[in-house]
Length: 82
Image (cartoon, rainbow, N blue to C red):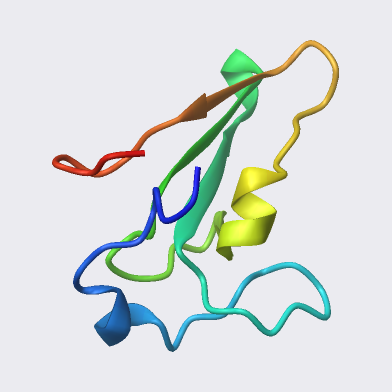
């Protein structure tokens, strides 16, 4: 997947780190859980931190898995090649 979630504006937003414990990498994607639909939604880094979302680095976003019975939906920004 490589730089699938990186954006040109990433340098302005890269002060946000990965939400995973002990990870010091810059966040490149935002993860949100939709409990009612048993869905984990992963997309480009949100413009600002959201209280019920998790920012992930490239490595953790690529390795994302969801609980059994849940589906993972991955979105990329328009114009990106992944």
